[in-house]
Amino acid sequence: MRIASLADTHLGFAGPGRSEGGRAVREIDVERAFSAALDRVVERQPDLVTFGGDNFHSVVPSTAAKIAWRDGLQRILDETSAHVVVVGGNHCTPRTSGVVSPNMLAPRHERMHVERAPGGVYLVPGAAVHGFGCSYLNRPGVVVPEPVPDALNVLLIHAAVRSSARPDAVSKYYAGPDAYDVARAQGFDVVACGDFHEFRLLAGAEPETPEVLAGWADTHGFTGGPLAFYSGSIERTSSDIWSEHAPKGFVFVDTDARTLEFVEVPGRPMFDWSGEDVRWGHEAGVARENGLEAPDWSRSDPLGCADLNECLRVIAADPRTGDALVRLRVDDFPRAERDGIDWLLVGELQRRCVLFRLDIRHPEAERVEFTDRRERAPHTLEGDARLFFAEDEPPVQRACFDALGLAIPQEVGA
Ligand SMILES: [Mn+2]
Image 1 (cartoon, rainbow, N blue to C red):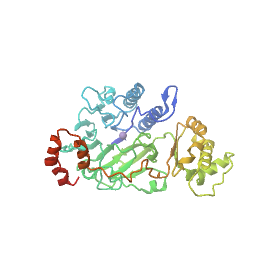
Image 2 (cartoon, helix red, strand yellow; image 1 turned 135 degrees about the vertical axis):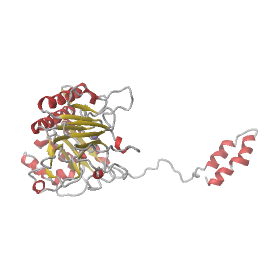
Image 3 (cartoon, helix red, strand yellow; image 1 turned 60 degrees about the vertical axis):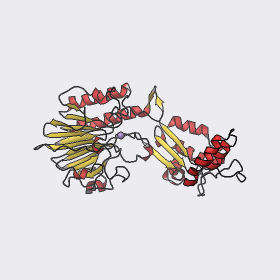
Image 4 (cartoon, rainbow, N blue to C red; image 1 turned 180 degrees about the vertical axis):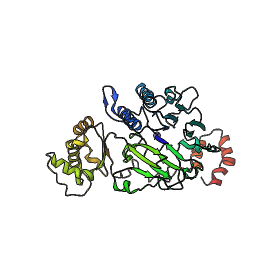
């Protein structure tokens, strides 16, 4: 059986970034990536296509995102003979009963299966797909049903999972020790996961085949046991896109050939540079090639505004940064030099790039004490209470406080 497994398509993700013709460029990017992914799905003529949740970025996505979803799924139905199974993710699953998930806009078709409740089993020719969307699997008391006999059993999950087979595949802080262990999915052949935005092999395949190491293929051979993976997102759509360096795409599994292929999908180029990268990296060389004088980069102390402005000019002259996602991060930038930054050039870069972010961090500021506290006694509960009751006339409350209230702060040492 041939399975194309997509996840975290985040249709409707819109920013941050520039707009064009009234639409966020990044939203169009996600739709383009979706379409490019489907080109590669159709090319491979799978028997089964799975969508592992966060198919939309929100439960109320734009109309354009809804159309992209409906038309994309219709294309799979029209141009392949595959069955399609969709589960929800935390982004596309409503939290109130009055809202319907946009996943439900999938075309009505006998080969189209959209999760209505977690734990559903979708029987398709040759396989049983068990759907557990929206982190449902990690909730207490949830038990994965028995695999269906004489079928290829696929577990389709949207959750932070862990793998005892490859505990370092994702950070140990990502999924806790109580998370579902995909390496122990007894009786399941394929465990396709959504939620983590980068492709990760979790179990059942050799991560470093000679082809992968040689850099000319991304095909992994099965090693036995449940084959588990995160497909990753198809574009940079997390809250910190600068941490998403790995290629984007989806997973294609051939259970007869016993191979797993990571199919890359091209996306918007991203450059995340420090001041040092621009000063010392080959970006400086690119600047020289583009006719910019190489500035005096011989000093290694923190960048001042003259250096920073030079970095901005290098970035603006680099042909790769046009229409790209670019961040320049400068640590320990002297606060006093902020006004010397060429903000006009920053604005120019913001128009040149789809997204340009100047991320400046100042040195740890000295603590500033605005009042002289040397003469002031420290606050205590007792002191405040004595002040409060001092003008009590007749002194009934004060007497009560002296007799009863004072015992309490004294006991707790307040
Ligand atoms: Mn996601």
